[in-house]
Length: 77
Image (tube, one colour):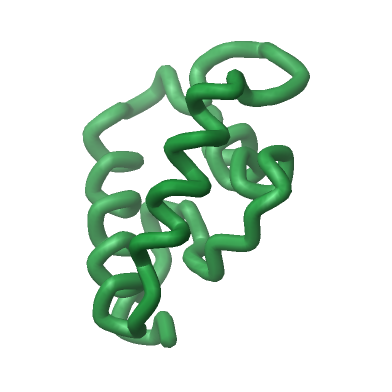
């Protein structure tokens, strides 16, 4: 999220896969969304939101939760 690497590290992708597998219900996905939303706000200017949003796809994972500080997490199913 903060670097310029062409792809995320294996450890990063492992974390994305693990998080995705644990978010199996709408409530889990909403909680994940709220956590990611809070994290993006705390990390500040050193984070590229475009890089952050592209991590799941580059890891081959569809998380179903947008990574954005402006997403409405109550609309996540």
